[in-house]
Image 1 (cartoon, rainbow, N blue to C red):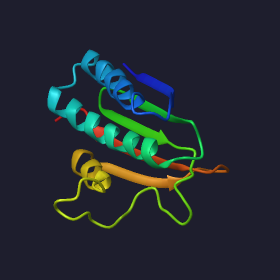
Image 2 (cartoon, rainbow, N blue to C red):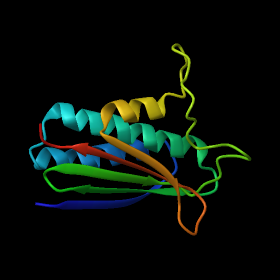
Image 3 (cartoon, rainbow, N blue to C red):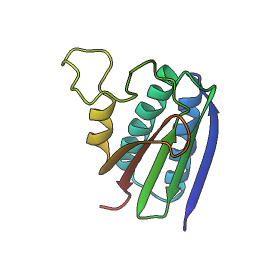
Length: 135
């Protein structure tokens, strides 16, 4: 079975839990174990939080997920506007006691593949991550 979810969400704090719950419900329906679902939810939450906090050029963002029983593939797409000269994802490691700045580290720790790229022909970025659904 293949499940495809595409959401256009408002760039506000209430949208991240909606995205996480929607994808988690689909994963649960596919019989994915709770630990794998938790990893995906954490990675998705981090990607959404970055968009909500920093992508000021748009009032909306997109979440696209494909689950085929073997893998979960997620794209979080923003409209840009991270500020002059700012990168949406800082590659530097955050200090151990920092309250923010660890999004990439968390997504990398929870998934098997992470790619961040500019959108084609539009402002913004695409955060793409993948996670195996089977042990």
